[in-house]
Length: 317
Image (cartoon, rainbow, N blue to C red):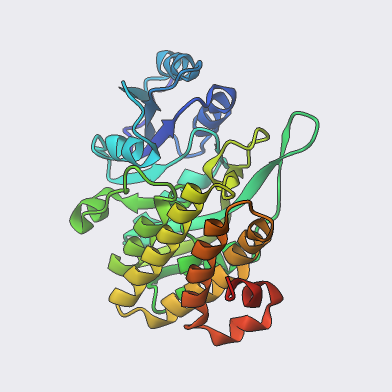
């Protein structure tokens, strides 16, 4: 049997109580057409069989390495733990309940290697419950398509402001030295830790690439426990709005005017309407007050958004 090549990319795979999904995520790594990878599996003090799934993977494939938190520290801390151990030229991320497409690493590593850019991002789709106990991938959403089509190499956020809508860590592969040179870390102890890091990446990169390929299937869990499915909770809403606000501030501070304006319009078009629908009948008036304050701050920058009845309603809370 031919030995695996020396790894060029490390994939950091954090997981907490994801035993039901982790085997599929790890299988998606094994199926990569680029075999020169290694993975750091960070068990964030799981209480289910996640450690067993990780241990079985490491026992059968030396490319998997396990690190365990003895107490739960959260997704941002788990990613940082893995990031600190990366020794390869490139680094990527995969949440342990998601799935990489087979050519994801080949395409992302390949374009950055050829272009010399600091990182590359690809498209992604939701993996939704099919009602029969399985999951099916959806379509590429318009904002994802706008960020990743057509393919571009060595672009910047000023040349391609729509890229600012791609704020997820697991859609990208980066040069490891870019993270270290730029001092990039995930925020710990908060939800939606991707957003601030993504906008800092766009703002600080010398150049980045985009590819239209779908690189990840992003799971929407049938049990509704993922953080993106808990926006009806006031603390989760507060973290969500803070993450978006801080991401816009990074673009503002970097002088990336077009990207900041694009991000504001996208949030008003995509993120705010479902929150308004949640808020209308929410039992907590504070939920509406917090959301209304946020919406008014964005509408001040994009007055045309008040043509939406949902946006107009939120400005009155």
